Amino acid sequence: MKLVTYVLNPTAPCDEGRAGVLLNSLVLDLAALGRLAAGSLSAGSEEPLPSTVLALLQQGAAAWERLRAAFALASQREPRWLQSQEGLAYPLEQVHLRPPIPTPPTIRDFFAFEAHVRNARARSGLEVPPQWYQIPVFYFSNTSALYGHDEAIPYPRHSQALDYELEMAAVIGRKGQDIAAEEAADYIAGYMIMNDWSARDLQLQEMAVQLGPAKGKDFATSFGPCLVTPDELQPYRRGSGAHERFDLPMRARVNGLLLTEANFQEIHYTFPQMIERASQHVRLRPGDILGSGTCGGGCLLELGQERHRWLVAGDVVELEIAGLGLLRNTIAAPPPDRAAHQSP
Image (tube, rainbow, N blue to C red; front, side, top):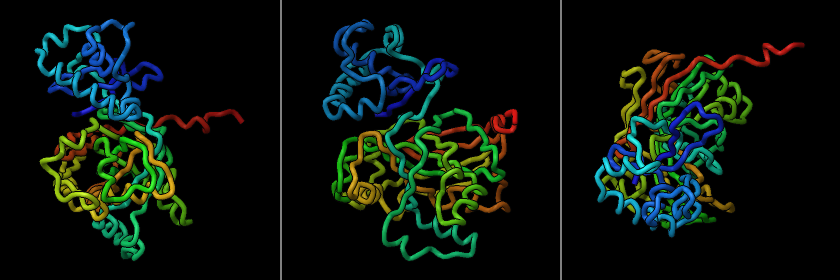
């Protein structure tokens, strides 16, 4: 299945959206779908399915079984009938997508593609440190600046070097601690495209003091367009257990120009290995997000200014991964500097 978080009115304040599941070109509201399966679409009736993707993950296996049964029931109906039921189905082109999980408990972004590490460090005349081959490393990102498909990304005001990063993300589906890599794939609820937007000048300034990245990263991260469950990716699966990978072509375009071509199976550390590392001595929870890190050639830093300038307002960035869809964002002008307009 492909799960989304959607809103009907993108200008509504504080609307983090509702959970939906894709049925061809329709978005089926999860809670309404649950009421349909229970025999009543009345808004006052009990909702056997939650209204957010995070709540679905938190409710666990029983909620997933109810969803599968309800989805199977809806799949037997004609699209016109589904749209005739109030609050149940909306054409995909008429809704606005938010990140599939707008409020994840944590975001850990790893550094798992050797080609990216090698290419990025070579730009500074450095080699891959031997420690990188010993452990999968990550940093914690900001859970409060997340964007979905087709949402505008505000340009970070103090930067002149905005970059995209083509990544894949895994979402934890059940809690666990000290998870062995051989068993870790069973903890993944689904996958989605991730764009770890980066202000390279701010990042360079921070990491010169051997701390960070922080402000060079935390202004925006995009996820979407949907959360794809593992069964959807079985045709692409290569290996198993700790060595599970997926043969997924990855592409990035800026204003229609193809800049990145890679494949997810080129990753050095697998998601099961990342989960093992992340869960050491700590508890992972449903909704926690793990980013793969940038694929080889998956950012402008690697490609160099001779290939493409840094991003500017008005640029359209499209990230595409086979099986996961396409995540598109437009760069917006930076917001006003409030501090500069404050009275002394």
